[in-house]
Amino acid sequence: MIDFLVGIYGASGFGREVLPLVRSQFKETGAKVVFVDDRDGPGSLNGYPVWKYEQFRDCESKYRSMVFAIANSEVREKLAGKCESDGIDVISVKADNAVILDEVSIGEGSILCHFTQLTSNIRIGKHFHANIYSYVAHDCIVGDYVTFAPSVRCNGNVVIEDHAYIGTGAVIKQGSPERPLVIGKGAIVGMGAVVTKDVPAGTVVVGNPAKQFSSRG
Image 1 (cartoon, rainbow, N blue to C red):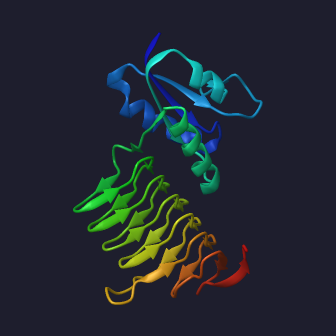
Image 2: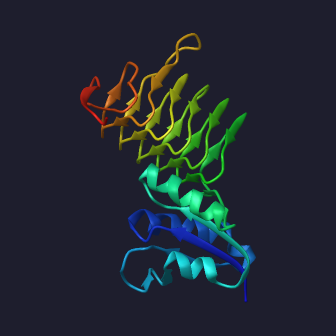
């Protein structure tokens, strides 16, 4: 029987980036680390085994936990529900050089990659992904299943609703305490976009300044 089993759900590029975070965070526990992926593929990745979900679920272990290295927020939500129903704990992982300052709360299942920063007075929901070199500044509220690609700049007094995706290098202008800038539920902010005003739910915005490109619904 395995004492401590940790799964990285998603045998992809991002999964390989998350692996060193998991390895570092759990090195003192002697945990067995595996990738979990439901697609057919190689039996190992970067020297670690790749299991199907059922193999992970049915493995005899004293403690099992999972982190979701999958960018698609809707898939993350479905997998979180599956793990919850099967009694598998969800964990958060954080790079050793990620910075978290004062009065920051983060829900379960977050991934904070290298060189990310959360400053002060921030509330973040569950299953948040912050990729390398991203930051969230003061007085921001971030919902559940929000994804930041690399180098996202989220300035102060911004509200980002559930399932929003913020693309690589996007910049979100600072709002104000009286009127925070709002990125609506399920919105997508394109790579390199500069957001200067609210983004309606379910829309895709691109450019500088960001303008609506399409609607997702």
